[in-house]
Length: 105
Image 1 (cartoon, one colour):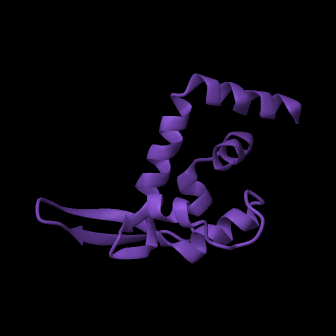
Image 2 (tube, one colour):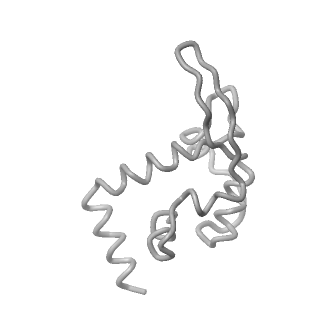
């Protein structure tokens, strides 16, 4: 639904979440990087405000998938959201369904 919303409104996922994103320096054993993250509560709030999802209740599987790490389950990364959307774009069957939804409106 997020992809459909972005396509219909001709915006990026970054634009959808820009008001709730913040930069965080992350250090791991092998690298140091700055990551765009958001609080899970803000993620669900934005989805509800955009009418992508009804209500602001967390979705456990989605949250596990998008989380920064198991140590920080309440922080979600924009990078994971973008990667998921990109993977969906590569799926022809999925994209045909999105196109059908766009044409239905």
